[in-house]
Length: 446
Image (cartoon, rainbow, N blue to C red; front, side, top):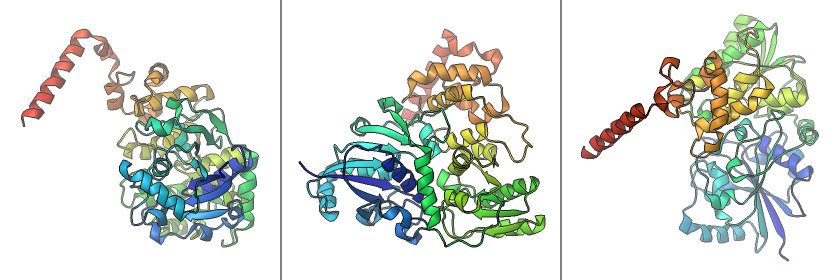
């Protein structure tokens, strides 16, 4: 019987930690050779350190029999944008089996969300390999991006997630009825604790400081030149407004090299002692190292790990601002932004907005999933209608769902109440169909 090689494909140290926690919790059946396939899908991966140079990776290295680079394997293509052509797949699989010493091994894949280019490309190359999906962030609670090829979706055995929002089940791959499984928190904390123990490339960190978690707008698909600094300054002001006179700023790993200038100037003005970290250290390592008194961010996953896993107080800044700039309602970053806006206290409003009730959360995610991908999740329409009928007039709900999007789907809140009869009016619907037909005909004549 051929040997089994289990390939763990990850693009961040946090993702590797989540996969190791799943591995040590018995989420994968049977013995196997374990290979880490690291994929750096940042804007300029050539400028990023190798995985074995990342602070904390030394604690994870011995869990794997080999560490490989997807970037090296597909060079000169960028992993965030490249997927193989169908006719090239057999040749590519033979090439990678020889390059990585897989021979005739039975291959299993452990991937991040399979609707993103690196994970999708690996799944396409190893045709027929069983797939386990391990999502480490909040985007897994949202729908699959687009219609995933059934030849990949039906191969997924389970969706593993760290349970960042207790009681909430990921919507990712739900259209394929893939079961979701929570990775035990104890296993995750054990792994991050080991990473913190071997991380020594940090400056002295003040005890009880506020930790500011950086946000990369470019990574979210938001073009807002110079506004990242303004967002981080708002985080600092939020911490200072809560009485904190010491702060640590942890830039996002995908952030450009220039950062911190505006933040330092604002810290000096506010009289706050500021430490800016240069090393790309996972926030969870900082939770272990300095036990911050407050964690401030926008829509970062770290806010939820801090609250759910470490019991730390958290606060959000700028989620409403971010939602305004997610011009595409289908942008996967909408789900983390909405969850942060719905569940976490706002640093700038003085706690005036109450968190969404736990019983409403499932319907909120269903409504988001339907409005983002109605063609993938048509069965979620009743839950979306139910939630929006109850909350369509709420100011925060108007931030989460664009009125134009609701109107296009004939959902509550899409048009003024006095015109709510129109979507159900046969005459109005007939006129709308005729107008669309005339528009298509005019386009064809041009």
